[in-house]
Amino acid sequence: MECGSKKSRDICGLPVIKVGMGEGVVAASPHIIISEGIGSCVALTLYDLRLRIGGLAHITLPRYDPCLRHCTPYQFADTAVHKLLDSLISAGSRDLDIEAKIAGGAKMFLSCNVDYSLGRLNVESVRTVLEAKGIRLAAWDVGGHHGRRIEFHLGSGRIVIRAIEKEDKEI
Amino acid sequence: MYKKDEASEENLDYLTEMMNIAAGNAAMSLSQLLQCKVDVKLPEVFILPVSKVSSIFKDPSMPVLCVKTEMVGDVKGAMFLVVPNEQKKNLLKLLKQSIPNGLRKRMPVDSTIIEEIANIIVGVFLSAIHDFSGLNIFHTVPMMAIDMVQSLLDESISSLSGENNDVTIIESEFTINDENVRAVIFLIPVVKSREKLFDSISSARKKYGMR
Image 1 (cartoon, each protein chain N blue to C red):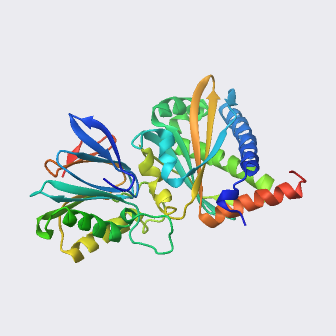
Image 2: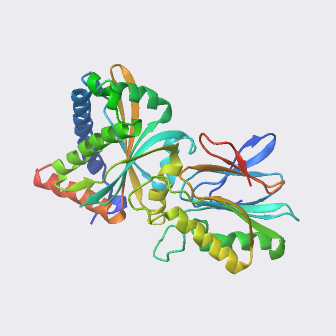
Image 3: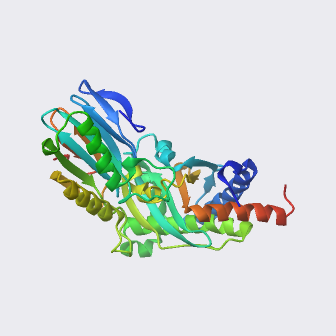
C-alpha cells in the first residue's frame, strides 16, 4: 500500500482500502479499493486476472507539470499509468495479462464555457497513454454531469459505480 | 510578499472580522427579501490545505447542494456556497415565501431561486473584502448542482494541487424563521491571488493604523 491510501472497515468481511484525490494503491485479492467523490477526476484501474492483483489511481490532471512542486505520480494521467504499471510488473504481472478500466471525467457544472472540460481532457490523456503502452482498455464509464463512487473488487476485477439518484452500475 | 509560513493569525483575524460583517449584511439582505427574521452565527474562518478540504464534510460522497461562481478582477479563482442536501426542501420553502402571491404562478424553477440567493450572499461577502482591502473582486453568474461534495469541488481543487495552496473556508449558520440552515463558503483563489489578498489585508491594516 502506498501514497496516502488508508485501510478502512470491511465490506462483507473483505478488507477495504480508501484512496483519496491524487493517491494510488496496488493490492491483491480479496481487498476492495474505494475511491469517492469523483467528478472531473478519473479513477484508473489496472487488473491482472491471472494473479488477482490490481491497482487504482485517482487522477486529477491530464499531464505532469514539472513546475508543480508538491505532487505525487498518481495525480497525473501520464505518470499514474506508468507508476501503476511498474508496480504491477514488479509484483510479477505480465503486460499482456493486464487490462484497464476507467471511470469519471464528468463536467459537474453546465457553464457557458462548453468547450472546456477538465474531465474530458483527463479521459483523453489516460486513453492516449494506455494505447501507447499497449494496455487494453476493457471497460469505461466516463463523462456526464454526475459524481461517482468507485468500488474496485480485487477478487474479480469488477468495478461497482455508485452515483446519486442512479442505479448502481458494474463494469 | 505574503508567504504561507507567515500566515499571521492577525491577518486571519481580520479576514474573520470581514466575514463577520459580511454575514451580518447577508442576514440583513435575506431578512429584507424574505420579509422574516434572519439571524446568523459568528462565522468560523479557517484555512486548510487543498488535500484536506473535503474532510470538513467527513464523507466525500455526501450529497450537497452547491452553487459555484468564478471570481474575476483583482482576485481570481472560484467560490462555492455549499448547503447539505437534506436542507434543500426546507431552504426552498423559506425562499418561496418571499415570492408574492400574484407571481407564484410564474414561479421560477427551484435552481433559479437558489442561484439568485447565492448571488446575493456571494456578492455581500466579496463586497466586505472590497470595503476593507480595496480589492475589486467580481463574480460570474452562479451555477447550481446537487451531487457528492468532493465531486463538485474537485475540478477547482485539482487545478491548485501541487502548488501547496490552501483553501479559505467560511462556515456560517443562518437561522431563518427559527429554522437552521448551515451554509459553508469555500473561497479558492489561485495562488497569486491568494498572496494578493493577504498582501492587501496587511496594507489596509497599516493604512488604518491597525497593529
